[in-house]
Image 1 (cartoon, rainbow, N blue to C red):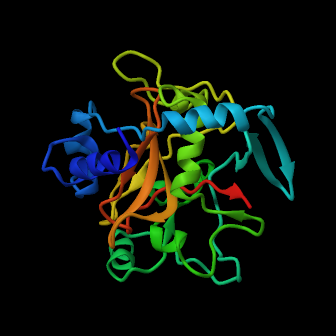
Image 2: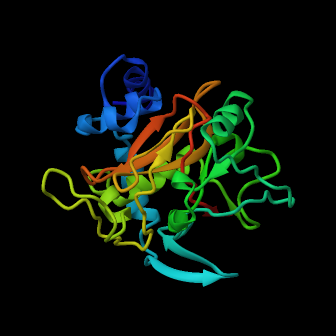
Length: 260
């Protein structure tokens, strides 16, 4: 199945009126109403050819964690990723990224297509997960990523996913602790390459928080349609990485930077 048909399959899931966890939450239903429907399926992004290319060209270097300018990073193949989610409150030019604590503030930022950030539940004890940003902050021309870094493109996320092996890339990227169990099985990962993906949850465009401990969501820099952008997520349920298109650019997800 080629690239185009798989993008279409993602969109068909997005637009279908189903009672799935991701659909209902992004449509702003309360967490308590949809968590009972936690069993769901989406479509992982395919790329067998890319996977083979990655094996021959990118996996030779060992994965190893390093630190530079107080930023910890890990080399995975030919890519260099931060080992923590982004936690900045200024753009590259020094301008403040607005914090939106209340649901009204968050929704207003979404409605007005303005950048915003928050901590999960507006609780600074959740700082270990990094900040949640809407896509307007991610794509702001002032630049959200620190100097020398950028927000990964859709293709860069795909390269990472395919290179690690699509069936278990999520297990490789997830942290070894912190994930909730699912159907009696541990949701923790192996953290095999030092990516240390934590289950940071997210915030929908109306300001509701959900699924810390269950999911990690990361933005890409690339939009899908006028109101949508591509993101990637892993969950406690299985070991895959999923590519999806958001219902709104006003959703709050984590950001993981890649080096220039």
